[in-house]
Length: 476
Image (cartoon, rainbow, N blue to C red; front, side, top):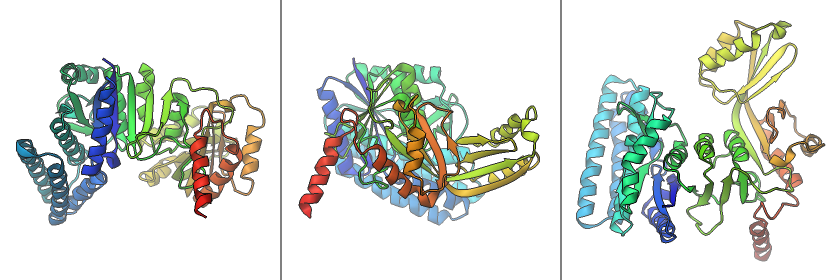
């Protein structure tokens, strides 16, 4: 049995029409004698609305919270009625009613106590994936695809870090074997929500924003899938964000290592942790477009074919802050750097980039949430300054290994932009630098023009770009 795990994002299940497209894609995989396991996000924008409802309840605005719930109820009921008919629809409506009664009781309780704990927040936002996965499973069953709903909380087992729970590999694998494999053996298509999980005691947790991709990879690893497909609303990984550069190209093939760097440094297509479970089992990951399913997408594999261009993609990470820690000649003191990093560790704040000189350490962080407390703790060690509204540009490509003169080309291409911090030594396949957020668009366009002027057609979808250019010329 060749298992394919298919994860569909929020825009791929945003309404009845999108869910019908999803069913067609899944039916296509089944027609190729593959055994699909489907992981779905909440319908587009639902998680944001659930968070808004929880926050309204926390402020004591119970009426506002319930009004959001009522709108969500109407949307889900309407979608269900457009896809399912007869007795199955009646059963689905009753189930949806139960879920919304539970959500509304929770919101009323929140409005009464006006305290939103991480545990309660996870329980509220988990409703999005619970609702979408059940509607899709019932729709699959009705149209002859043998859909079977699986509550992801019975399979994905985590620790109790609410909001960003860490999966427990052995327990998750055992539960996938217990709950999902029998369905596959019966030729059914299991459908579960991404992002949501539970502790061993059954308390609902979530895997953090973008966690549905992570769920897909965990399921793929746990079931020894032959491939994992991430279905989104773009044609795959691009050479850069098309909103920044109209000439961006689709990358046909990329290595796990390159994709992980891009994901960490701001590429929105993937959640950084998605890559890890797939790497452990050497499972290829495809990034595909549910609105354009015939497009080839991007293949992420252990090794990618050689590319004659030095870089594969340019990622951008915005809303960063540079923290400068200046301490005279203290920097060379034994244990000083450890003391600095212990502060960030204590506040659970990850650091993106580090640069040191004899008298100072500069670090970048992407969270302003605990910045005053971090600065206060650091000021006990040294003088502290911080600057916000910075952006990190990360250029990734395995072909930069050992290439002389690459840095000179990069900085010559953006010589008109003020660069704040530079990092290359930490990774042989990544060159990163900081700048003002306002300079990003100009810098990316200059870099893209220089490094992707003559793209390797074995790696990049040159034909699609040329066709788009011809179409633009023809229109004018």
